[in-house]
Image (cartoon, rainbow, N blue to C red; front, side, top):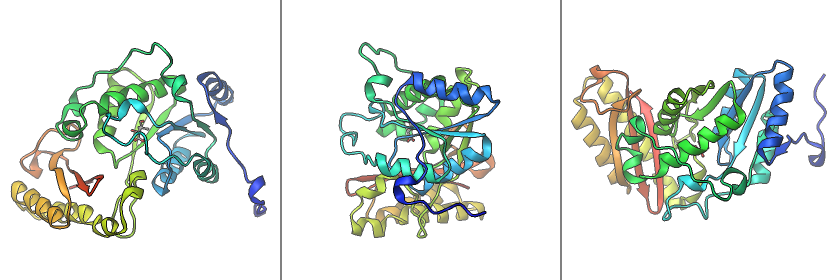
Length: 292
Ligand code: PAF
């Protein structure tokens, strides 16, 4: 039998948990029934990329919980914490419609109460000289909040988008180093039809910038294909950089790295290779990456 179409006011809305005690009570109920749990940490402003993470969470576990928390600790003073898009009501609708089970949306004081004085110091992939070169305090803030979320939720699996590829590697590292039991799973990047990777920050692009934005992905695709065809690494990466600059970007980096360690590689023979890029279009900084 088909599900009845309910008026908006009667659509299913997931519970919203505001503190760790409520989170743990909900999780305990599920665990008592033998159900497995997938956590998808986010900062909200959900889009189709996040919906794909929920679909993966549902495929990997019985219950899908999403955290929505714009984490002040991962933004530097000159970054966009103040105007990062916040669309909580729409997020709740999207997550509910995607079949999620509960949202954990703590206020800042719940995550960082008065006297909070701990920050993880991260190395390895967090010190690969990619994002960390331009955002030196970022990964400590990400690692600290993700460690807290993994500890608060103790999920069986935790899902992160591959779009933030260095972040994914950093989180896999801390989960392993700190013995978190959760399996860290990366989910493929979801793209607009023209190739632009979905990102909550795409709303910052002007209409002119939006037209130019797919050039970043196009350059990575072209570079990856040249490398697969045997092109020399240095020339292929330089050509990608030139085409991204020609499209109006200011490039922070375009680099070929080992996909696991993020160490620099000089040729595709050195192992699974990932191309990673960050570049600014006007005031908007876009990042992207693809496998070679
Ligand atoms: O990728 C994000 O949205 C954030 O960095 C994360 C992992 C939710 C931590 O705040």
